[in-house]
Amino acid sequence: MLGGKITFGTSGWRGVIADDFTVDRVRVVTQAIADHITEQGLKDRGMVVGYDTRFLSERFAEEAVKVLAANGIRTYLSTRDAPTPVISFEIIRKKAAGGINVTASHNPPEYSGLKFSSSWGGPALPEATLDIESRANTLLNKNSILVITLAEAKEKGLVEDVDLQKAYSDDLRKKIDIESIRKGKLKVAVDLLYGTGKDYLDSALRDAGCTVTVIHGHRDPLFGGRSPEPSEINLAELSAVMKKGKFDIGLAVDGDADRFGILDCDGTYVNPNQALALLLDYLCRTRTWNGGAARSFATTHLIDAVAKKHGIDVYETGVGFKYIGDLLVQGKIMFGGEESAGMTIKDHVPEKDGIVACLLAAEMVAREKRSVKDMLKRLYKDVGTILNERINIRITDTNRKEMAERLSKPLTEIGGLRVKGKKTTADGTKYMLEDDSWILMRASGTEPVVRVYVEAGSGERIEELVGAGRKFILGQ
Ligand code: VG1
Ligand code: CO
Image (cartoon, rainbow, N blue to C red; front, top):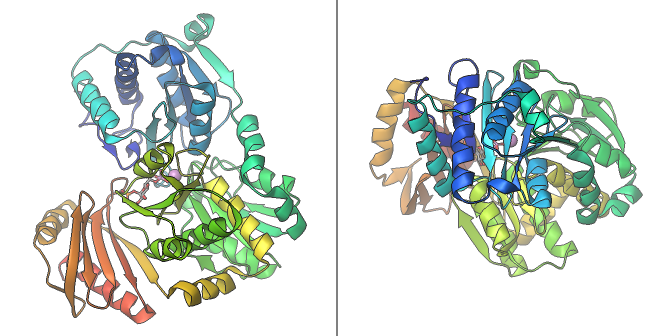
Protein backbone atom coordinates (compact mmCIF):
# COMPACT_ATOMS: atom_id res chain seq x y z
CA MET A 1 0.00 0.00 0.00
CA LEU A 2 1.30 3.41 -0.98
CA GLY A 3 1.03 5.31 2.33
CA GLY A 4 -2.10 5.94 4.44
CA LYS A 5 -5.68 6.47 3.37
CA ILE A 6 -6.47 9.26 0.95
CA THR A 7 -9.13 11.64 2.22
CA PHE A 8 -10.68 14.71 0.70
CA GLY A 9 -11.17 17.42 3.34
CA THR A 10 -13.15 20.64 3.25
CA SER A 11 -11.68 21.46 -0.15
CA GLY A 12 -9.61 18.85 -1.95
CA TRP A 13 -7.03 16.32 -0.88
CA ARG A 14 -4.04 17.83 0.95
CA GLY A 15 -0.86 16.31 2.31
CA VAL A 16 2.70 17.00 3.28
CA ILE A 17 4.97 16.82 0.25
CA ALA A 18 7.11 13.66 0.05
CA ASP A 19 5.14 12.15 2.94
CA ASP A 20 1.42 11.90 2.03
CA PHE A 21 1.62 13.89 -1.15
CA THR A 22 3.83 12.02 -3.62
CA VAL A 23 3.98 11.48 -7.38
CA ASP A 24 2.61 7.95 -6.98
CA ARG A 25 -0.33 9.08 -4.89
CA VAL A 26 -1.15 11.95 -7.27
CA ARG A 27 -1.30 9.33 -10.02
CA VAL A 28 -3.61 7.18 -7.90
CA VAL A 29 -5.98 10.08 -7.15
CA THR A 30 -5.97 11.15 -10.80
CA GLN A 31 -6.77 7.58 -11.89
CA ALA A 32 -9.69 7.64 -9.45
CA ILE A 33 -10.87 10.94 -10.95
CA ALA A 34 -10.48 9.53 -14.48
CA ASP A 35 -12.62 6.51 -13.49
CA HIS A 36 -15.17 8.81 -11.82
CA ILE A 37 -15.69 11.03 -14.86
CA THR A 38 -15.62 8.06 -17.21
CA GLU A 39 -18.44 6.47 -15.27
CA GLN A 40 -20.35 9.75 -15.39
CA GLY A 41 -20.05 9.62 -19.19
CA LEU A 42 -18.15 12.92 -19.26
CA LYS A 43 -14.77 11.70 -20.38
CA ASP A 44 -14.97 13.15 -23.91
CA ARG A 45 -15.33 16.67 -22.54
CA GLY A 46 -11.76 16.83 -21.30
CA MET A 47 -10.34 18.23 -18.08
CA VAL A 48 -8.81 21.58 -17.18
CA VAL A 49 -5.55 21.16 -15.25
CA GLY A 50 -3.65 23.86 -13.37
CA TYR A 51 -1.22 24.24 -10.51
CA ASP A 52 -0.16 26.82 -7.94
CA THR A 53 3.27 28.27 -7.10
CA ARG A 54 4.25 25.61 -4.55
CA PHE A 55 7.23 23.30 -4.70
CA LEU A 56 6.91 20.85 -7.64
CA SER A 57 3.34 21.93 -8.42
CA GLU A 58 3.78 21.87 -12.19
CA ARG A 59 5.46 18.49 -11.91
CA PHE A 60 2.51 17.04 -9.99
CA ALA A 61 0.15 18.59 -12.55
CA GLU A 62 2.12 16.89 -15.31
CA GLU A 63 1.63 13.56 -13.57
CA ALA A 64 -2.10 14.17 -13.52
CA VAL A 65 -2.04 14.97 -17.25
CA LYS A 66 -0.11 11.77 -18.00
CA VAL A 67 -2.67 9.63 -16.18
CA LEU A 68 -5.65 11.42 -17.76
CA ALA A 69 -4.08 10.98 -21.22
CA ALA A 70 -3.43 7.27 -20.59
CA ASN A 71 -7.15 7.00 -19.89
CA GLY A 72 -7.94 8.74 -23.18
CA ILE A 73 -8.95 11.99 -21.46
CA ARG A 74 -7.87 15.23 -23.07
CA THR A 75 -6.34 17.96 -20.89
CA TYR A 76 -6.45 21.72 -21.19
CA LEU A 77 -3.21 22.41 -19.36
CA SER A 78 -2.60 25.89 -18.00
CA THR A 79 0.53 27.55 -19.34
CA ARG A 80 1.17 29.18 -15.93
CA ASP A 81 0.19 28.81 -12.29
CA ALA A 82 -3.53 29.29 -11.94
CA PRO A 83 -6.00 30.59 -9.34
CA THR A 84 -8.69 28.05 -8.44
CA PRO A 85 -11.55 30.40 -9.55
CA VAL A 86 -9.85 30.68 -12.95
CA ILE A 87 -9.91 26.88 -13.30
CA SER A 88 -13.59 27.06 -12.44
CA PHE A 89 -14.18 29.74 -15.08
CA GLU A 90 -12.41 27.66 -17.73
CA ILE A 91 -14.34 24.47 -16.89
CA ILE A 92 -17.57 26.35 -17.60
CA ARG A 93 -16.18 28.06 -20.71
CA LYS A 94 -14.90 24.81 -22.19
CA LYS A 95 -17.86 22.74 -20.93
CA ALA A 96 -15.21 20.40 -19.58
CA ALA A 97 -15.78 17.30 -17.45
CA GLY A 98 -14.12 19.08 -14.54
CA GLY A 99 -10.80 20.40 -13.40
CA ILE A 100 -7.82 19.64 -11.24
CA ASN A 101 -5.79 22.32 -9.54
CA VAL A 102 -2.62 21.19 -7.83
CA THR A 103 -2.78 23.46 -4.80
CA ALA A 104 -2.85 23.35 -1.02
CA SER A 105 -4.35 26.83 -1.03
CA HIS A 106 -3.60 28.62 2.27
CA ASN A 107 -1.77 25.71 3.96
CA PRO A 108 1.86 25.99 5.10
CA PRO A 109 4.64 25.53 2.50
CA GLU A 110 5.33 21.88 3.27
CA TYR A 111 1.88 20.98 1.96
CA SER A 112 0.63 20.35 -1.53
CA GLY A 113 -2.86 19.41 -2.55
CA LEU A 114 -5.27 18.57 -5.30
CA LYS A 115 -8.59 20.31 -5.72
CA PHE A 116 -11.09 18.60 -7.99
CA SER A 117 -13.84 20.76 -9.45
CA SER A 118 -16.90 19.19 -11.06
CA SER A 119 -18.36 19.83 -14.52
CA TRP A 120 -20.57 22.59 -13.13
CA GLY A 121 -17.40 24.47 -12.16
CA GLY A 122 -17.57 24.30 -8.38
CA PRO A 123 -15.63 22.33 -5.79
CA ALA A 124 -16.85 18.74 -5.97
CA LEU A 125 -19.67 17.86 -3.57
CA PRO A 126 -19.27 14.98 -1.09
CA GLU A 127 -21.10 12.53 -3.39
CA ALA A 128 -18.29 13.01 -5.92
CA THR A 129 -15.36 13.17 -3.49
CA LEU A 130 -16.56 10.11 -1.56
CA ASP A 131 -16.64 8.17 -4.83
CA ILE A 132 -13.17 9.40 -5.80
CA GLU A 133 -11.80 8.66 -2.32
CA SER A 134 -13.14 5.14 -2.30
CA ARG A 135 -11.79 4.44 -5.78
CA ALA A 136 -8.40 5.92 -4.82
CA ASN A 137 -8.15 3.86 -1.64
CA THR A 138 -8.94 0.69 -3.58
CA LEU A 139 -6.35 1.62 -6.20
CA LEU A 140 -3.67 2.13 -3.52
CA ASN A 141 -3.55 -1.62 -3.09
CA LYS A 142 -3.48 -2.42 -6.77
CA ASN A 143 -1.00 -1.79 -9.48
CA SER A 144 -3.41 -0.63 -12.12
CA ILE A 145 -2.63 3.01 -12.76
CA LEU A 146 -2.44 3.88 -16.43
CA VAL A 147 0.33 6.34 -17.29
CA ILE A 148 1.94 7.44 -20.54
CA THR A 149 4.70 9.98 -21.11
CA LEU A 150 3.91 13.62 -21.67
CA ALA A 151 5.51 13.44 -25.12
CA GLU A 152 3.20 10.56 -26.05
CA ALA A 153 0.19 12.41 -24.66
CA LYS A 154 1.09 15.44 -26.78
CA GLU A 155 1.68 13.31 -29.87
CA LYS A 156 -1.77 11.82 -29.47
CA GLY A 157 -3.22 15.33 -29.26
CA LEU A 158 -4.42 14.71 -25.71
CA VAL A 159 -2.83 17.81 -24.20
CA GLU A 160 -3.55 21.36 -25.19
CA ASP A 161 -1.55 24.14 -23.55
CA VAL A 162 -4.00 26.92 -22.79
CA ASP A 163 -3.78 30.48 -21.57
CA LEU A 164 -6.49 30.73 -18.92
CA GLN A 165 -5.83 34.34 -18.11
CA LYS A 166 -7.22 36.33 -21.00
CA ALA A 167 -10.80 35.07 -21.10
CA TYR A 168 -11.11 35.27 -17.32
CA SER A 169 -9.63 38.77 -17.12
CA ASP A 170 -11.80 40.05 -19.98
CA ASP A 171 -14.86 38.70 -18.22
CA LEU A 172 -14.06 40.65 -15.04
CA ARG A 173 -14.97 43.84 -16.88
CA LYS A 174 -18.55 42.62 -17.13
CA LYS A 175 -18.80 42.02 -13.40
CA ILE A 176 -16.93 44.91 -11.86
CA ASP A 177 -17.75 48.59 -12.29
CA ILE A 178 -14.34 49.44 -13.73
CA GLU A 179 -15.36 52.99 -14.62
CA SER A 180 -16.13 53.81 -11.01
CA ILE A 181 -12.78 52.43 -9.91
CA ARG A 182 -11.13 54.55 -12.62
CA LYS A 183 -12.88 57.69 -11.42
CA GLY A 184 -11.71 56.96 -7.87
CA LYS A 185 -8.04 57.19 -8.97
CA LEU A 186 -7.21 54.75 -6.19
CA LYS A 187 -3.83 54.10 -4.69
CA VAL A 188 -3.77 50.42 -3.83
CA ALA A 189 -1.23 48.30 -1.95
CA VAL A 190 -1.32 44.65 -2.96
CA ASP A 191 0.20 41.59 -1.28
CA LEU A 192 0.22 38.64 -3.66
CA LEU A 193 1.67 36.35 -0.97
CA TYR A 194 3.95 34.77 -3.62
CA GLY A 195 0.93 33.01 -5.11
CA THR A 196 -1.16 32.61 -8.22
CA GLY A 197 -2.89 36.01 -7.97
CA LYS A 198 0.06 37.68 -9.68
CA ASP A 199 -0.89 39.50 -12.89
CA TYR A 200 -4.53 38.81 -12.16
CA LEU A 201 -5.34 41.14 -9.27
CA ASP A 202 -2.57 43.71 -9.78
CA SER A 203 -3.10 43.89 -13.56
CA ALA A 204 -6.87 44.25 -13.21
CA LEU A 205 -6.35 47.15 -10.78
CA ARG A 206 -3.84 48.82 -13.10
CA ASP A 207 -6.23 48.36 -16.03
CA ALA A 208 -8.82 50.16 -13.91
CA GLY A 209 -6.48 53.14 -13.56
CA CYS A 210 -5.26 52.44 -10.01
CA THR A 211 -1.72 53.18 -8.88
CA VAL A 212 -0.59 49.83 -7.56
CA THR A 213 2.24 48.95 -5.18
CA VAL A 214 2.88 45.21 -5.10
CA ILE A 215 4.72 43.16 -2.51
CA HIS A 216 5.55 39.43 -2.64
CA GLY A 217 4.77 39.33 -6.35
CA HIS A 218 7.27 36.61 -7.20
CA ARG A 219 7.25 32.86 -6.72
CA ASP A 220 8.62 31.64 -3.43
CA PRO A 221 7.62 28.04 -2.64
CA LEU A 222 8.47 28.76 1.01
CA PHE A 223 6.10 31.74 1.09
CA GLY A 224 8.58 33.80 3.08
CA GLY A 225 8.39 31.22 5.88
CA ARG A 226 4.65 31.65 6.47
CA SER A 227 1.42 30.29 5.05
CA PRO A 228 -0.03 32.06 2.01
CA GLU A 229 -3.15 32.97 3.96
CA PRO A 230 -4.24 36.63 3.96
CA SER A 231 -4.70 36.71 7.73
CA GLU A 232 -4.03 39.75 9.92
CA ILE A 233 -0.64 38.46 11.01
CA ASN A 234 0.44 37.51 7.50
CA LEU A 235 -0.57 40.93 6.17
CA ALA A 236 1.49 42.85 8.76
CA GLU A 237 4.09 43.68 6.11
CA LEU A 238 1.43 45.07 3.77
CA SER A 239 0.07 47.10 6.64
CA ALA A 240 3.56 48.51 7.32
CA VAL A 241 3.88 49.50 3.64
CA MET A 242 0.53 51.27 3.85
CA LYS A 243 1.50 53.15 6.99
CA LYS A 244 4.53 54.61 5.22
CA GLY A 245 2.58 55.94 2.25
CA LYS A 246 -0.87 57.19 1.36
CA PHE A 247 -3.22 54.50 0.15
CA ASP A 248 -6.96 54.07 -0.32
CA ILE A 249 -7.06 50.33 0.32
CA GLY A 250 -4.82 47.28 0.78
CA LEU A 251 -5.72 44.03 -0.98
CA ALA A 252 -4.44 40.47 -0.90
CA VAL A 253 -5.33 36.98 -2.10
CA ASP A 254 -4.28 33.57 -0.77
CA GLY A 255 -2.02 31.04 -2.52
CA ASP A 256 -4.66 29.93 -5.02
CA ALA A 257 -6.38 33.34 -5.08
CA ASP A 258 -9.76 32.09 -3.94
CA ARG A 259 -9.62 33.99 -0.63
CA PHE A 260 -9.37 37.74 -0.18
CA GLY A 261 -7.64 39.99 2.35
CA ILE A 262 -8.56 43.65 2.87
CA LEU A 263 -6.78 46.44 4.76
CA ASP A 264 -8.40 49.80 5.38
CA CYS A 265 -6.72 52.99 4.12
CA ASP A 266 -4.69 53.29 7.34
CA GLY A 267 -3.42 49.70 7.09
CA THR A 268 -5.90 48.25 9.61
CA TYR A 269 -6.92 44.67 8.87
CA VAL A 270 -10.58 44.25 7.97
CA ASN A 271 -12.10 41.13 9.44
CA PRO A 272 -13.48 39.03 6.52
CA ASN A 273 -16.90 38.68 8.17
CA GLN A 274 -17.21 42.44 8.28
CA ALA A 275 -15.97 42.75 4.71
CA LEU A 276 -18.59 40.23 3.56
CA ALA A 277 -21.40 42.12 5.29
CA LEU A 278 -20.26 45.43 3.79
CA LEU A 279 -19.96 43.92 0.32
CA LEU A 280 -23.39 42.31 0.53
CA ASP A 281 -24.91 45.62 1.62
CA TYR A 282 -23.07 47.43 -1.16
CA LEU A 283 -24.14 44.92 -3.82
CA CYS A 284 -27.76 45.08 -2.69
CA ARG A 285 -27.63 48.84 -3.11
CA THR A 286 -25.81 48.95 -6.45
CA ARG A 287 -27.00 45.86 -8.39
CA THR A 288 -30.49 44.83 -9.39
CA TRP A 289 -30.08 41.13 -8.79
CA ASN A 290 -32.63 38.64 -7.56
CA GLY A 291 -31.82 35.91 -5.10
CA GLY A 292 -30.72 35.44 -1.54
CA ALA A 293 -27.45 35.39 0.32
CA ALA A 294 -25.67 32.23 1.47
CA ARG A 295 -23.26 31.92 4.33
CA SER A 296 -21.64 28.94 6.00
CA PHE A 297 -22.57 27.72 9.48
CA ALA A 298 -19.44 29.42 10.88
CA THR A 299 -19.99 32.77 9.16
CA THR A 300 -21.27 35.95 10.80
CA HIS A 301 -24.95 36.57 11.40
CA LEU A 302 -24.25 40.14 10.34
CA ILE A 303 -25.02 38.74 6.88
CA ASP A 304 -28.51 37.89 8.13
CA ALA A 305 -28.96 41.41 9.48
CA VAL A 306 -27.94 42.92 6.13
CA ALA A 307 -30.15 40.46 4.24
CA LYS A 308 -33.09 41.40 6.48
CA LYS A 309 -32.50 45.07 5.77
CA HIS A 310 -32.75 44.40 2.03
CA GLY A 311 -35.52 41.83 2.30
CA ILE A 312 -33.58 38.90 0.88
CA ASP A 313 -33.43 35.28 2.03
CA VAL A 314 -30.49 33.74 3.88
CA TYR A 315 -29.27 30.21 3.23
CA GLU A 316 -27.04 28.57 5.83
CA THR A 317 -24.65 25.91 4.51
CA GLY A 318 -22.00 23.56 5.85
CA VAL A 319 -18.39 24.72 5.95
CA GLY A 320 -16.81 24.48 2.48
CA PHE A 321 -17.59 26.58 -0.56
CA LYS A 322 -18.96 23.59 -2.48
CA TYR A 323 -22.31 24.05 -0.75
CA ILE A 324 -22.46 27.74 -1.63
CA GLY A 325 -21.37 26.99 -5.21
CA ASP A 326 -24.21 24.49 -5.45
CA LEU A 327 -26.77 27.12 -4.36
CA LEU A 328 -25.36 29.56 -6.91
CA VAL A 329 -25.79 27.17 -9.84
CA GLN A 330 -29.30 26.42 -8.63
CA GLY A 331 -29.99 30.14 -9.09
CA LYS A 332 -31.03 30.61 -5.47
CA ILE A 333 -28.49 33.23 -4.41
CA MET A 334 -26.89 36.44 -5.64
CA PHE A 335 -24.15 36.36 -3.03
CA GLY A 336 -22.32 33.70 -1.06
CA GLY A 337 -19.64 34.12 1.57
CA GLU A 338 -17.56 32.27 4.12
CA GLU A 339 -15.84 33.77 7.14
CA SER A 340 -12.52 32.32 5.95
CA ALA A 341 -12.55 35.12 3.33
CA GLY A 342 -14.33 33.42 0.47
CA MET A 343 -17.07 34.90 -1.67
CA THR A 344 -18.69 34.87 -5.07
CA ILE A 345 -21.53 36.69 -6.79
CA LYS A 346 -24.38 36.05 -9.18
CA ASP A 347 -23.44 35.12 -12.76
CA HIS A 348 -19.89 34.42 -11.68
CA VAL A 349 -18.13 31.13 -10.91
CA PRO A 350 -19.65 28.81 -8.28
CA GLU A 351 -16.32 28.96 -6.44
CA LYS A 352 -14.89 31.51 -4.09
CA ASP A 353 -12.95 34.16 -5.94
CA GLY A 354 -10.47 36.38 -4.09
CA ILE A 355 -9.74 38.44 -7.19
CA VAL A 356 -13.38 39.39 -7.67
CA ALA A 357 -13.83 40.05 -3.94
CA CYS A 358 -10.81 42.41 -3.92
CA LEU A 359 -11.97 44.24 -7.05
CA LEU A 360 -15.45 44.69 -5.57
CA ALA A 361 -13.88 46.07 -2.41
CA ALA A 362 -11.91 48.55 -4.55
CA GLU A 363 -15.10 49.45 -6.40
CA MET A 364 -16.93 49.97 -3.10
CA VAL A 365 -14.21 52.25 -1.72
CA ALA A 366 -14.07 54.22 -4.98
CA ARG A 367 -17.83 54.77 -5.06
CA GLU A 368 -18.51 55.31 -1.39
CA LYS A 369 -15.49 57.59 -0.98
CA ARG A 370 -15.15 56.59 2.68
CA SER A 371 -12.83 54.44 4.72
CA VAL A 372 -13.92 50.90 5.49
CA LYS A 373 -14.05 51.91 9.15
CA ASP A 374 -16.61 54.61 8.37
CA MET A 375 -18.68 52.28 6.23
CA LEU A 376 -18.70 49.76 9.04
CA LYS A 377 -19.76 52.36 11.59
CA ARG A 378 -22.66 53.27 9.34
CA LEU A 379 -23.60 49.63 8.85
CA TYR A 380 -23.56 48.92 12.59
CA LYS A 381 -25.78 51.93 13.18
CA ASP A 382 -28.15 50.56 10.60
CA VAL A 383 -28.37 46.90 11.55
CA GLY A 384 -26.77 46.61 15.01
CA THR A 385 -23.27 45.79 16.17
CA ILE A 386 -22.12 42.21 15.75
CA LEU A 387 -18.45 41.50 16.38
CA ASN A 388 -16.69 38.21 15.83
CA GLU A 389 -13.42 36.38 16.15
CA ARG A 390 -11.92 33.10 15.04
CA ILE A 391 -8.92 31.46 16.61
CA ASN A 392 -7.06 28.35 15.52
CA ILE A 393 -5.66 25.98 18.12
CA ARG A 394 -3.00 23.48 17.14
CA ILE A 395 -3.74 20.15 18.79
CA THR A 396 -1.80 16.94 19.29
CA ASP A 397 -3.27 13.49 18.68
CA THR A 398 -3.64 13.00 22.45
CA ASN A 399 -5.61 16.14 23.16
CA ARG A 400 -7.60 15.56 19.95
CA LYS A 401 -9.19 12.46 21.48
CA GLU A 402 -9.94 14.09 24.81
CA MET A 403 -11.29 17.14 23.06
CA ALA A 404 -13.60 15.06 20.85
CA GLU A 405 -14.96 13.48 24.00
CA ARG A 406 -15.55 16.86 25.63
CA LEU A 407 -17.16 18.21 22.45
CA SER A 408 -19.55 15.29 22.29
CA LYS A 409 -21.05 16.11 25.70
CA PRO A 410 -23.74 18.81 25.66
CA LEU A 411 -22.89 22.09 27.38
CA THR A 412 -25.33 24.07 29.50
CA GLU A 413 -23.13 27.05 30.30
CA ILE A 414 -20.25 28.76 28.48
CA GLY A 415 -18.21 31.78 29.62
CA GLY A 416 -20.56 32.31 32.57
CA LEU A 417 -23.68 32.46 30.42
CA ARG A 418 -26.50 29.98 30.02
CA VAL A 419 -26.87 28.13 26.70
CA LYS A 420 -30.28 29.08 25.36
CA GLY A 421 -30.19 27.05 22.18
CA LYS A 422 -27.95 24.93 20.05
CA LYS A 423 -27.67 23.66 16.52
CA THR A 424 -25.69 20.55 15.67
CA THR A 425 -24.51 19.83 12.14
CA ALA A 426 -21.67 17.88 10.55
CA ASP A 427 -19.54 20.92 11.44
CA GLY A 428 -20.14 20.65 15.17
CA THR A 429 -22.49 22.32 17.60
CA LYS A 430 -23.16 26.03 17.60
CA TYR A 431 -24.17 27.18 21.07
CA MET A 432 -26.40 30.23 21.31
CA LEU A 433 -26.03 32.04 24.63
CA GLU A 434 -28.52 34.13 26.60
CA ASP A 435 -27.11 37.46 25.41
CA ASP A 436 -27.43 36.37 21.72
CA SER A 437 -23.71 35.69 21.43
CA TRP A 438 -22.65 32.32 20.02
CA ILE A 439 -19.71 29.97 19.91
CA LEU A 440 -18.78 27.13 17.56
CA MET A 441 -15.83 24.78 17.92
CA ARG A 442 -14.86 22.47 15.06
CA ALA A 443 -11.90 20.54 13.74
CA SER A 444 -10.51 21.94 10.50
CA GLY A 445 -10.75 19.80 7.38
CA THR A 446 -7.65 21.35 5.81
CA GLU A 447 -5.14 21.75 8.65
CA PRO A 448 -4.32 19.97 11.96
CA VAL A 449 -6.08 22.65 14.03
CA VAL A 450 -9.35 23.20 15.86
CA ARG A 451 -11.16 26.43 15.11
CA VAL A 452 -13.15 28.40 17.66
CA TYR A 453 -15.62 30.87 16.17
CA VAL A 454 -17.33 33.39 18.42
CA GLU A 455 -19.72 36.24 17.86
CA ALA A 456 -20.99 38.84 20.36
CA GLY A 457 -22.06 42.45 20.74
CA SER A 458 -18.94 43.71 22.49
CA GLY A 459 -15.18 43.26 22.46
CA GLU A 460 -15.15 42.12 26.10
CA ARG A 461 -17.68 39.36 25.45
CA ILE A 462 -15.61 38.22 22.47
CA GLU A 463 -12.52 37.98 24.70
CA GLU A 464 -14.44 36.01 27.33
CA LEU A 465 -15.85 33.59 24.80
CA VAL A 466 -12.52 33.07 23.06
CA GLY A 467 -10.99 32.34 26.49
CA ALA A 468 -13.76 29.88 27.32
CA GLY A 469 -13.36 28.13 23.96
CA ARG A 470 -9.59 27.86 24.32
CA LYS A 471 -9.95 26.42 27.80
CA PHE A 472 -12.52 23.95 26.62
CA ILE A 473 -10.43 22.71 23.69
CA LEU A 474 -7.19 22.42 25.63
CA GLY A 475 -8.93 21.06 28.72
CA GLN A 476 -7.35 23.48 31.23
C1 VG1 B 1 -11.19 26.13 5.60
C2 VG1 B 1 -12.25 27.20 5.79
C3 VG1 B 1 -13.38 27.00 4.79
C4 VG1 B 1 -12.80 26.97 3.36
C5 VG1 B 1 -11.73 25.91 3.27
C6 VG1 B 1 -11.03 25.91 1.93
O1 VG1 B 1 -11.73 24.86 5.91
O2 VG1 B 1 -12.76 27.17 7.10
O3 VG1 B 1 -14.29 28.05 4.94
O4 VG1 B 1 -13.81 26.73 2.42
O5 VG1 B 1 -10.73 26.12 4.26
O6 VG1 B 1 -10.39 27.14 1.71
P1 VG1 B 1 -11.41 24.15 7.32
O7 VG1 B 1 -12.12 22.84 7.28
O8 VG1 B 1 -9.91 24.05 7.41
O9 VG1 B 1 -11.94 25.07 8.37
V1 VG1 B 1 -9.06 27.21 0.68
O10 VG1 B 1 -8.65 28.77 0.47
O11 VG1 B 1 -8.06 26.15 1.33
O12 VG1 B 1 -9.69 26.54 -0.71
CO1 CO C 1 -7.44 29.09 -1.17
